[in-house]
View (cartoon, rainbow, N blue to C red):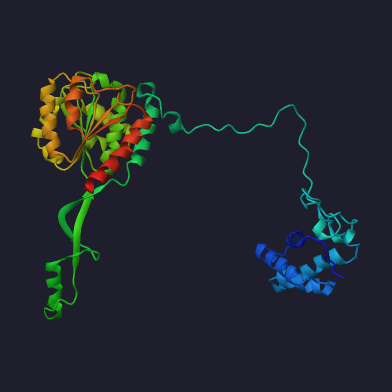
Length: 397
């Protein structure tokens, strides 16, 4: 008669393996799976058959045989009445009732009984008290909590947190093809000079053909930040955006109020606090008036004007300008002919019902490829991502 009639084979194998592990035999999941499959393929009808099936499946090393014999003998030394087969479950009820636990057996180890009916270890009762069960409170991350807050409500530490997030967001900046070529095995163009030079070693026969391809470099970025009085709340955050581009895309950075100041060297400092501090020291007309048209003409006529050719020009300003709108329109027209893309970041563009009614913004808008809102954390991070996507799309045209 089979000793395992009506018994859950998986539960029996797991319980026996657990006792073996407590005794020092490393019976893992693979061994247990082999044991279950062996029992299902040929259910043992004698104790000796069960012994060899379990030993072959669960024991891997010779020194563990003695321990296995001791555990197996402790479990099956006495032969208690086998548990009855489970009756068929009535309709609508799961057949997951436990097998009754046999009588305790002193030689069977702690818990007594056969291994397939071993009770789970007891858990100590919880201490009595009036405190209810408390679950950890889930709070948003520091950056997520500041996503929709205006810049004027943030302190220096929170703005520095934005700078780190911007630098992490501005990665994988799009590249452009240059006129230079470099030797690359995957190139499609024949490199004539290297091929002829190597042919000198093979009697001028071009045995080894050298190929080259165009060198790609990151698309140049030029950023101009308005640091006038109307941009006091956004100026520091925009400087962090410019520092991110200066570190990742090798950008040229300028600040303008009534005069133009170059901040590229200052914002490349490794410390964000030191970079913003040095940039603030370079700008002498901070939080004053605004002359956008005059500063654009100064940049176009300076030695840095060539940096605008084929570059993505980003202007961060609210559009308030003391120069006549006609002068700003003429300067923007010159800038548009020289640049690859012109993107304008306006902190007020995300306000519902916004319309470019300011004379300066209305004059500059026809020469801009994109007008993006940038008045909060979330909008500035989205603008950094859109700058990358817009540059990639325009570069494929």
